[in-house]
Amino acid sequence: MNFNGKISVVTGASQGIGEAIAVELSRVGAEVILVDIQEEKLEDVARRIRDNKGKSYTFCADVSRMEQVKEIVEKIIQDHQKVDYLINNAGITRDRLLMRMNEEEWDAVLAVNLKGVFNFSKTLIRNMINNRYGRIVNISSVVGQTGNPGQCNYSASKAGVIGFTKSLAREVAPRGITVNAIAPGYIDTPMTKGLSESVKKAFIDLIPAKRFGTVEEIARVAKFLLSDEASYITGQVIGVNGGLFM
Ligand code: NAP
Image (cartoon, rainbow, N blue to C red; front, side):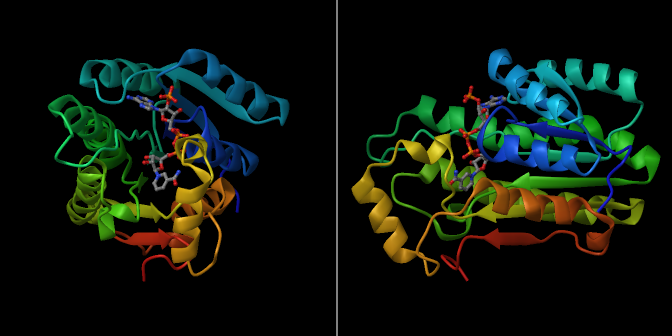
């Protein structure tokens, strides 16, 4: 696969799945615009990409804040004129049973995981429509498909991402733009590092593949959905979950 000259925006790119997607895209020639809420970690990823002769640029923004998203998208378009790929990956958890979940925990998760997807897609879609080309990949989750106790906020946000993906896919398909979602299962990242060994073991017992996935296993699917090979795939949810949900 050759992504030379493709301008890609990856949100939540400083670690975990976002970092792996950014590194993989740069490896096949894409120019990668890394977006995250913390500057320091972003620079480390950008350095890693540049050390491997890739091209990357960093932008610090909170994806849930429309004014910040607009500001950086304006700069990106000024510098590059176009964006070919958008990977909406930034996400957070604030897990608690609904009985104990407070409004802040609900709002924070919905704001980053769902409104963040709206903010970036809305701000970039006109550019893609004008170019008659674009690929959007949204990172949902298996729990958006199955639900999970303690994650009413998170699973609602991720189910929302699936509905958003399908609606936008229908809107922009005639303009040469595809919109798909990846629904990862349990993946080894800083997000899942906090799980206790007993909880991890309980999850692994439920996963037919008997292990957590790796960030590279998600990055390779994202790369495929962005590639020309996937030009007739849109509005789909690709489960990458070791068989946890089928
Ligand atoms: P992660 O390691 O926590 O990385 C998420 C990144 O997003 C972090 O760098 C985080 O920055 C950044 N971020 C958080 N809030 C942000 C905001 N408001 N604006 C910009 N950046 C923000 O998570 P991950 O495991 O790689 O997850 C990536 C995506 O996959 C998420 O959408 C997650 O829900 C989804 N997912 C993960 C799993 C899994 O098992 N890991 C499974 C299914 C789906 P800070 O660290 O500085 O907050």
